[in-house]
Image (tube, helix red, strand yellow):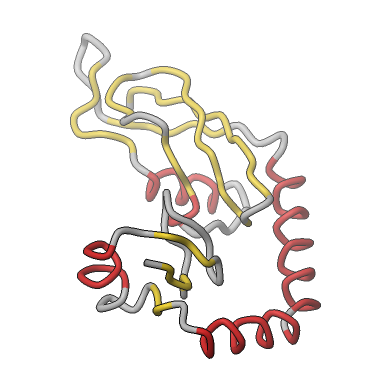
Length: 147
């Protein structure tokens, strides 16, 4: 089944992408939750016209994402967490805590664009990937220390 995404879906695609998915995934999850519409001929024509009209807006959004990525290049974060004597954290460090640490460093980033490759459950050095735009990603190193 071909669908048009109405918002970014992690692992599937970005807003306004036309993707092929299994029927059950499309009909039972993506369409009812408003994340996608069926890619009919008329919907594809509307999508093409909307993309033509938004071309300059998308260029500005990409430029803003590139500027933010350039500003985040030298940033290194330190996140404090309660930990045991063996270095294991009580709980875990997630994207919300990373977004708060970036906010303290003077960079406003939505927590939804922060991706962690593995759960952070111990003290140490890690890297978070920020997907600011479908063509702009930046990796931010952070260290988890005991409070």
